[in-house]
Image 1 (cartoon, rainbow, N blue to C red):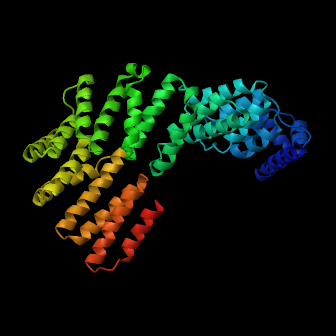
Image 2: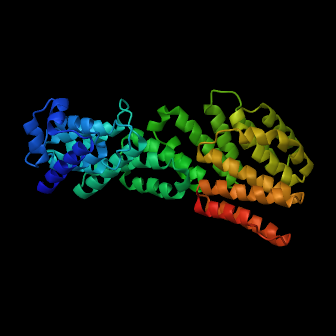
Image 3: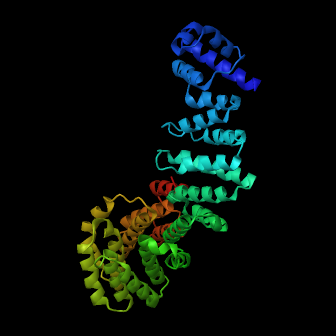
Length: 425
């Protein structure tokens, strides 16, 4: 404690002299006595927290700097709790302080379980605006503390909350997916609401990673869960993911079965997704002319944010049936629409990556090598942003094959772009 006390004293003296103030000046500005300021600077006493805050305000001491030292000195759990509540509401990045504050509070509390619960409830409260980085720091501290002290309920719940935040990082989809699956070990500790939300989040996550067997498993858990019966939106989305997953697994029969189930549960008319599904199914069944008509209708009538999904399926269809001229006809109109969209989630970003890849295929077909190369490298970059290494490598391979087949040397500009892809910057 002596080391921390003298560190605090030295810091206060340093900032007082830096501001060209006397102890008497500080005393007047903080409503304290000169003697009290002298004792604090000599390391003989620790200021009460409200006085420390006042001194820091007058001397312009950075919050993170003085709090870090003050926490070591404070022995009152209520004061540490006050510091915690103040810290989480600040706009400055205080996430690095959180582990120290929370750990100190838990160590000082007489009832550890209640203290962990209190901290957890603050972090999950809808009434307090807490930055995501700060929340994540709180949950990680709860995880570490709960694991070492055998508080399994809050270990499970904090792991769940941590996953819900970290899964939003598109560049780490595979890593965070495994973290989400790890929580299944503690599934009995979660409430029914948390259980369904976790399974649904994992299903969407698996869908973004194209792990369709996992999607099928998780979605069946949702639609067969008694509690989920009352959560109509999640059930409907689960049916939609089952339909699409069976389609991508080439099980057309079950894809159509879940399509019909989805129609029974949906209160709306035929959606854009329904229309697109009907078109791709007709193509799979060999009804090319009908599928062609349905793709065009869907593209003309769909909502703006659904354009990338229809565009990719339609261009893929046209390339497969050899109607290259039709791709050339529709690209000028569709490119601006897709490029102007704000694509925020991994599924949308995947569509953009596929769009570039399909453009690369088209330009390769018509021997426009430069445009094909540019689109393949753009596709590889977009795939890298959603942690899709296989498709990223495939696009780079297509790019290098073009260089080799056309006997073109890889230029410096392309080399830099490849470095950017591999560096995931």
